[in-house]
Image 1 (cartoon, one colour):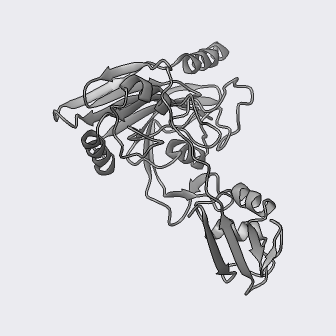
Image 2: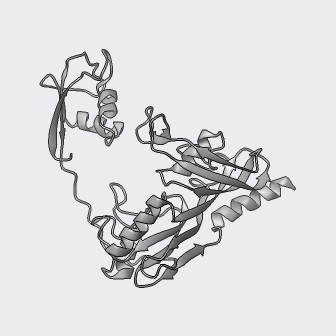
Image 3: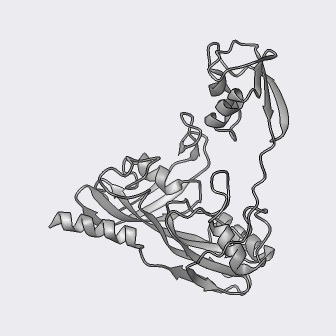
Length: 308
């Protein structure tokens, strides 16, 4: 869609709707802030005239939108230390630290997992994910720590991706939630899609993509609960969205929760501690785990001390 001109009649926008709101509803792939920037840069017109982001529309208005080409982001190898849990000719399993972005994107052009594995693997990575995501089979958020699989060739990548689809690749996360969970275990089965209120966020919405998260209580603290969450599906921000949906957001979550507050956390307290899959070359059942990171154990220690 980038580098193209689009035009439409405001048939889906009711009288008095703001231009930026209308366009963000029509184009799921464009955030409201991006649309506002396009308006400011003179790339949006209504009835042939440059339009402001807050212009009120009337039924039948003709909207023209120009999407300038995105600046190319080039992923380059960088000598960044990796915590490698396992490696062979087909794949890597790494333990990603909190605060590290998985692949380059606007605002995060370097110091990502991709930059690090490109240097480590010296060009031996699958190309299915494209030039910015070589080897990346699945992702975890910047402020989520834990295990990631990196594919070294296209065959491994395709077979691992198939396991994600058929649910034979399983992942278990540790999380500390806000509030005390009454039940020992449970399941959230609620569809996830783009939030109609904020296009940068995901939400439980009717007609969203199926999403299922199973959770089990590990420990109770004053005002918090340590749980293990296993994913049956892999939607964007799934655990964070589902836990907030049941009234227990992940502690420290700046987007779906109450932020850091008095926790001292920088981002959500969420760790991908276990992953299990079938090796794409040997057919062997592989399972890996990694210990809870320092930020997680320190926060839990603090909660325990407040219990005494």
